[in-house]
Image 1 (tube, rainbow, N blue to C red):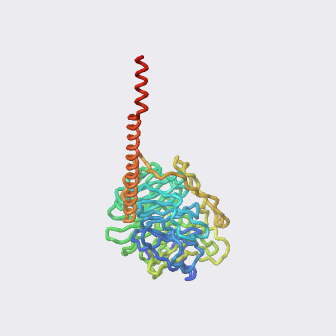
Image 2: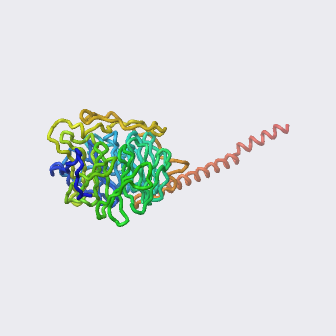
Image 3: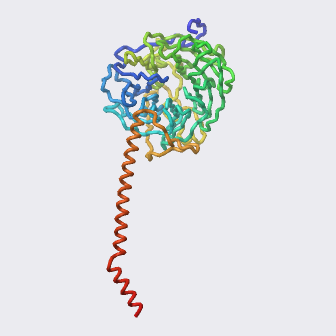
Length: 487
């Protein structure tokens, strides 16, 4: 599609990618070498988080987005997991709260202080245990505060209510590893792609599968909802092992609306959709380029715009939320590109060329802001509501008054749909196995000591009882009472 001429008039026809100057990049970061198909990067208006290579557990660094340059090798890390960190996501309504999931089968919630970390952070504000195998994906609900989705290698999706720190729903309709999760605008529908080659549209609160597609022509890897257009876009592989994208009607997955082949490379294609501009960005893992298109409801549906090219291959990409963009420079999208070989994070800005320095309202419509539309209880009760919109002209620097409060609870097994999620959870890493072994050994020693003390106590009580029975005072009293009765 990249060689096709463009004749359609569009305000985004000349969008171009601009790499930040070297002094505005982040250097010296030991980006993880894990081959898991995730971005290993998350960014918001305050912080940039990157999963790093580490020994003896998983860790990631959190850097203020304005702290450019070379990062100290001993820079503080978030390092509370016992296995490799597989995914990290910032809370969309609280810039200081980040969620992480790991090979140690846990999901953890961390609170980052303003200004960044001064020492290693090992204590999370919330630990969530419910999966029986490693957790590969996490997603925050787009309009509700305190609702987090996690997908594990046990083929299950858990819905966590962070206000109580417990799972409230388990979606168990997949037969293999879940590869991707995506919400529609109001968060009432969840689309998933799975290793069983099926595309599903699910009602998350009931767990009911509304639509399902299984095609041999298009092996789905990633899926994304196209805002409120009632469309889905998937990236995958064709029967000839070429990379392709497909557009679907969310209410009818019987056949794709359109299929387009991209190229013959082998890297995974990551789709990014901007609902405000209706632009789709395609970035291949291991590629150096980013293609971008405009989505329309009429034919040809996908309109190729241009391609950003770079010689440095990308391992993953973080995306800055809209309220963190530079509207004065007509920036409509910003990537944070992970270059593993150089330990480098490059900001890449997608810019609409405009000469005027005034606010460009036509490319910055009202956009989802930093205030939740619903509470967790409201959403769980069945209420749907669109996101609270904000203007980037006046509201993009507005401080958020939302405060995250972790629930106070005892660590106990979570029961969802009548199933104890923590019953017989096997260890998945060597460190976890050793930790559980030593813990059990300590428990056995404690129980043996208690048993020995109780045996000694029993013997003492038996001796006291025998002494009491054989006491001469008791015998004399008994004899005197018998003589008195005979007189």
